[in-house]
Image: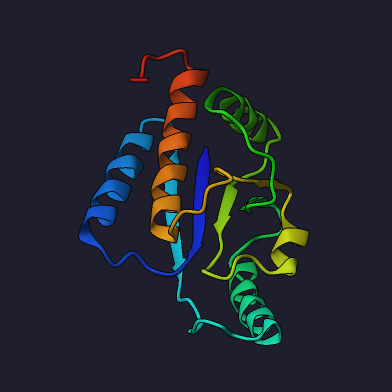
Length: 159
């Protein structure tokens, strides 16, 4: 089982890098996880909508260039369905049953995902209706993936 996370933007703070590394190590018992960081485009505050769309398109093009045709793509988007941990675990299990070689989770940049990524996505999910930084979203996704494997294997994990 392979999971790839494609994320716009880099992790600047050491404590997030440590948390990410910890969960990637934990997940190595269940699957191979890789993280593909894509440099974000500069997006100053109060950009007109047309410039925001151009930035999202540019970032989206970079993301799509790293996705293979046979990959199963899950886009993280605020407008996706919200799941609790048990439902997310069942959802993850259903993704692996589909038989794709790799499951790719996409975390967009500060402006969100381009329409092209949403169109390519096989599934769209949200981690929460709350807004998180992209660093936090990466850690939360990894934690939920780890929790899902524990749930699906009926292994104990703190609540």
